[in-house]
Amino acid sequence: MRQKQNTTMNQAIDLLINNDTVVSTLLKEDGLLKELTKRLVEKTLQSEINNHLGYSKYNQSDAQNSRNGYNTKNLITKNGAVEIEVLRDR
Image (cartoon, rainbow, N blue to C red; front, side):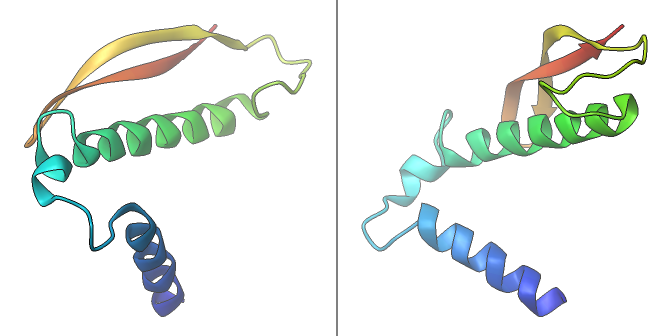
């Protein structure tokens, strides 16, 4: 299983970075590393709220708890602050 995960991760990295990629563009202030951090955190939070509410976005539920927009927050990382959108529920 771990080998398959590594293969998938390596393929994703290969899609993002090729021989023509300039390393400085990956690590600059608004570069790929910062965008990946933002997307990973937001995707994780989305998955967490789907699990918490018991249904995914655009599906209906009889539960009283539901999605209620999002707030923006600054996440402080080793590579600087990343502005993320944190989903809210009622």
